[in-house]
Image 1 (tube, helix red, strand yellow):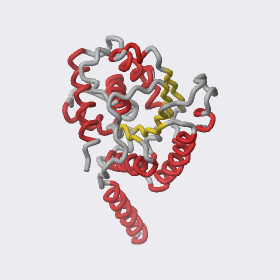
Image 2 (image 1 turned 180 degrees about the vertical axis):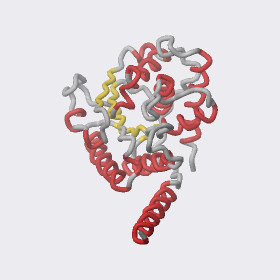
Image 3 (image 1 turned 90 degrees about the vertical axis):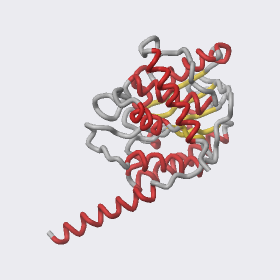
Length: 265
C-alpha cells in the first residue's frame, strides 16, 4: 500500500511539473500576412475537421463571401482520418502535386494533431517529430505550414482537465516556433467564446467534437489567421443556420483572439 501511494504521488507530481512547464506562453515567430490570398490549401486532420460539413468548406465560404474573385479560384482539399494522430497521414502522397487532384503545389498545408497528443510527453514528442519531418517536405515542395491548435475537452468527456488547454497551447506554439509554422489559435477561441457566451455550446454532447457553432468559430479563426483578414462583417452564416447576432459575436471572438495571440512579446 505504501509503495502504491508513493507511486501515485510520484505520478501526480510528475503531471504537475509537466503542466507547469507547459504553462509558459512563448512569443510567436511566424505572424499572419495581412490580406493574404492563398488559393491552394490542404487541411490534414481528423473528425474535428470533418464534422458539420467540414471546416474547409466553411473557410472557403468565408473567403467567397469576402472576395468573390479570389473565392472562384480556390482549390481546397481536406484529408481526414477519424481519431487520427498526425503521424497517421501519408503526407508525402498528399502534398505531391497532382496526387489528390491539385496539379500545382499547395500554398498552405494546415496540420492538426489528435486531441490527446498534447496530453502526454511521449505523444507530444511524436507530434513534434512528425510535424518537423512534414514541414521540411512541404517547404521543399514550395508550400507553407500552419498548425491548427485544437480545442480542449469539456464535460462529460472523461479526460476533462482545466490544464488541458494549457498543454495544448504550449505544444502547438513550441512546435510552431521550432518548425517556423503559423499557429491557428482555434482552441483559445473556444475558451474565449465560452467565457463571453456561456449559454452557447461549441461542443457536441460528447464533449469533444465541435458543434456547428464550434466549427463556424474555428473557421472564422482559421480565416483570420490564414488570410490576415478580419471575419467581422462577413456575410457567410453557414447557409443561414446561424443567427446574425450570434455569427457577429463569434466573428468578434475570432478576431480578438487572433489579434491578441499574435501580439505576444
